[in-house]
Length: 344
Image (cartoon, rainbow, N blue to C red; front, side, top):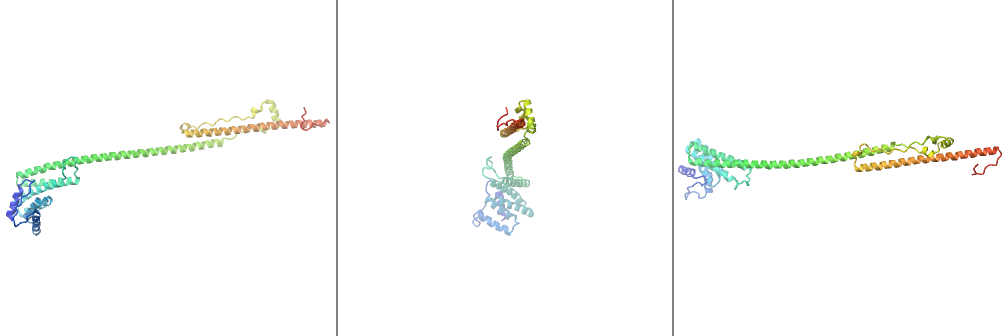
């Protein structure tokens, strides 16, 4: 068994890493890689700390392109070789573990992963980079034990691949940051537009409230102005006696002018009229015209009352003069006047 193991070691160790490991089948041995894996797994179950069994199982798994399991078995063989002082076997395990990690990294990457248009998931990139770093570490340990040119060559390939993966990771992070910045800018722009709309809505609402308050103040001011305006008092001549009114009319000769009350001045516009809307100004004009018409009607009523009082006064004077004449005629035994007859 040791001769077979040694043959596997040398045959597998010094082949190029992209080439499959050679397996020397015999007629009495399993004819497929999976059958060989099954046999070795059973042997490992019986003796899990045997480095040669661990190593041979790793070779079978590597041949079947199960690189992750092959790497585990090579690392297990390294630990057991150190315990049992299998120095040469330990060296080969470092080399094969490095190859397994390299192949495992390539297997987990998508096709055309180097293209800029191909996006590799961040978790996949992180796992690939970590696995490749472990592979480089295995090549380095082997070179310290046995500086072989194949190990240096494979290590250089692993380092070149690691550099490409790190550059890919950096580029994708930059692209992700740009996309995130664009998304943030778009969100900020959308938020700014929403804030502007809210501000405009609040401004419109405030303007509407100010207009409503202005309309209310204008209506309250107009009502107080109209309610406080009292009709002009009639001339004091209305309270005088008919005789006095008649004499005074004779003296002045123009009673109409004295009976007419002074015209009320039209209502003055509000101080904040320049801040009113056209609709408010139109309503104020209507209120002003209505107040002026009401005042004119009051003035006409006062004038009519004054004229009626004057006519009543004249009629009373005429009756008094008629009565005096009748009395005087009666005293002088004169014939009284008929009804409606004037003494003159």
